Image 1: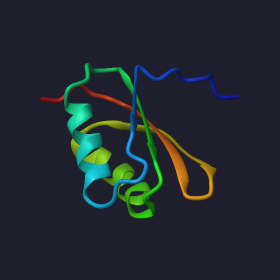
Image 2: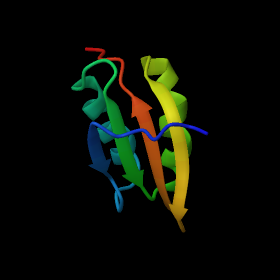
Image 3: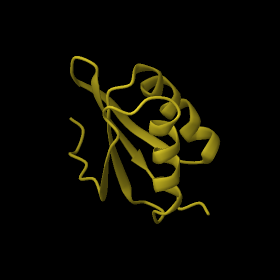
Image 4: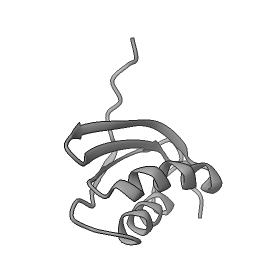
Length: 83
């Protein structure tokens, strides 16, 4: 069983559409220290696909993508503290 991950910071981008969920997530990650955990709450389907794909390009680690209810998702990301 996977250990429970406690987010360091939470970002709610529900109700926002392209490109804001992606941009807000990447901007927030740039301000975080290596190893901190970002929780992203979102409801935009394209960002649910794009954010995990872009994380690896930026050097961050995807921990999980979880569907909550309907279009709502929760993504957990480990920041690598890039500038």
